[in-house]
Every structure is written in C-alpha cells, then in structure tokens.
Image 1 (cartoon, rainbow, N blue to C red):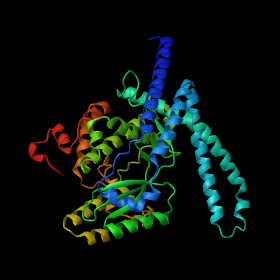
Image 2 (image 1 turned 180 degrees about the vertical axis):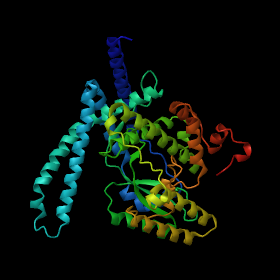
Image 3 (image 1 turned 45 degrees about the vertical axis):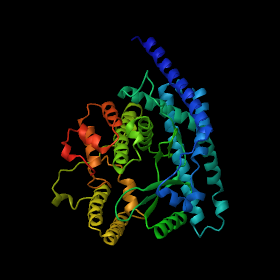
Image 4 (image 1 turned 135 degrees about the horizontal axis):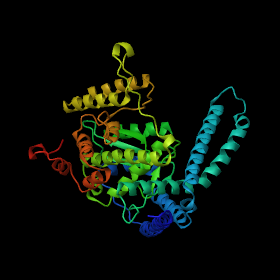
Length: 435
C-alpha cells in the first residue's frame, strides 16, 4: 500500500475508533442513567453495617467519567497529532507528575518537622508550585489518556484482538484516585468471601478500626488494601510515573472488559478458581501487551532485564531476599496448617513472617488469610502469593501452549470453570475436580 494510502487508512481507522467510542459512551450513559443497582447478597450483607457510610460511589464516579470520555471522543485533538508529539505529551505529563509527587512529599516533610515554627509560611512556595502543576496536569490528562488509549488499540490490532481495526469494547480508562478495598476471608481457609470498595482517603486508623470490627464481630479475617486498577467502564487506573506499570494496568483492565462479554467474565464470581483464571489471564496478557506498547512507542523506558549471575554461592554470598519466593513459601505453609485445622498456629506463623518482611524493608501492615485471598488470585508467576494453587499453574501452561496472545485469550474466554481449563489442556477425566 502506498504511503499516501496508508495515511488515509490510518486516519479512517482513527475516525472509526473515535465514533465507535462516542456511540459506546452514549449507550452506556443511557444505561447508567436508567439506574439499575445489582442486589447484594452473601457475606457482603453483613459487612455493609460497618462500611455503609464509607463506601465508594461508583455510580457517581462512572457518570462523571462517561461525561469526560464523551467530550474526549468528540474533540480528540491528540489522535491527529504526529506520533512524536503524542509520545512527548505523555513524557511531559509523567515528568510533571513526578514533580508534583516530590513537592507533595516536601510539603508533608515541612509539616511533620517539629522544628519548623510556621509550616504554612515555609511551604507556601511549594504549595503554590504544586497547585500550578496540578492545574497543568488536569489540562493534559484528557490528551494523555487519549494517546495511551490509541496506542493500546494499535497494539491490540497488531495482536489480532480487534474488529474492523478497533477493539471492542474500545480501550478507555480514567486516571483517578482509586478506592481502597475491604477484603474478607474465613479464618479456617483462604477464600475471598467479599470485596467492598471504600473511600480512597481512609486514614490508617480508620482502616485498622474497620478491620478490627469485622474480625471481632464477624469472626472473619479482614484487610483493607489499595488497588491499582478496577475493571469498571471506563476502567479506573491509579496515576503513576512508572509507564511500564501504567501500560500494564491499562491493558490488564481492558482484558477484564473484554471478558465481561464472555463466559469466563460471567463466571468471575462463581468460584475462587474462576476468579484466579480471570486475574491470571489478565495479568499474563497485561504484562505482555504492556511491554509491546513500550517497545513500540517508548523503547527507552523499557525496564532492564533482571541481572543474571551464574557465580557459585561461595563467591556471591547468601542469596538476595526474594519477596515473591518468601510469599510463596509462606502461603504453602499456611495452607498446610489450615488444612490440619491449626488456625492459631497459622496466624502466629503469618505474623512472624510479616515481621521478617519488615526487617528486609517490605513494610507489610498485616499478613493474614484475607491478604492471601486477595493477592493469591494473581498467579502469573510460579513464585507468588498463590502458593501451590494448581489453577494459576494451569493457566500459565495454557499460555505457554498457545501460539499467540490472541489465541490464548480467546481460548480462555470460552471457559466458565476450572474443569473446562483442564479439559482444554487434555488432562484425563480423573484429574478433574476442585483443586
């Protein structure tokens, strides 16, 4: 195809994606304004008496985000900028975001210093600079989001995950302060019983009070955790200066949006196994596609590979502390203790391991069954908080056997149970069953 024809084709694809976005947002706005709340049942019913006044307003956030995206889709100047100008826009935004974080940290340091007689006066210049940068960031944010959405769409097209050149649903995210999440698990086993999103500005004291209330009054293991992204539509993504993390989360959450129209997405909450299948699928693809986006548009920001060393242990000294390996070992032992009915011993062991993590610089406020119930669903690595859970291992095996990321996603999307995954891997019928 001639260069001129290529430009016409690219412009046509961009226009198609833009108008597809407008139509999608308009339809979603009508659905949201219709106001249909999904009834809550199960353990979450009991939790609402403690969380009712501090729960995150998803309907309000989503309607605001839809309005922003409708405007962004209607007047999307970033889509017609030269590629170099768009990538520079993203780099400039990340640089400003880093400066805003530095100023915020300096302001907090001034207010925390008891030797400073008048912190308001001493921080005035920094607060003025921070306000200016935050205004600039707010002005840049729509164009930065549109740029990363378009770049992610190109990567999905290269991967074969589009229809007529556009991913469905359209890639769409909003940089935002994310809610915290209350996760609960039984004490006798590791299983996520409920997850409730809470206000993002909860203090540590409020988090601890809520956890204590749930544990004392309901006899459950509980933990309030931060979240990096949520698969609403548009998806919610925490602002970050780390572009490798940001692109991974954007594509991870798009995978959840893709799956919600398919059996695996419908089965997300049906069992712990299908939740792990969902999250591990999204994690594997998010990492691979996010890396592809960096390789194509921001090659200088691709993280270096981890250092390799084949030197004998006698020459290199003791092995470095490996957080993921520590969590894997901890999870395996906790599962063993709980299977033997040794709940108190398992909790004492987790506390000892938590203190070990802190000694090595990993500030972990609470390590309990709820922690592993939440983090254990992300089993994209053999060394993880999933421990010896075979579900993540089976998803990784399917990933290794698939000839492309698109084939992997479409294969996983058709499943709605762990048994489906085992059959797809050709396991004998005797291997089927709950892991």
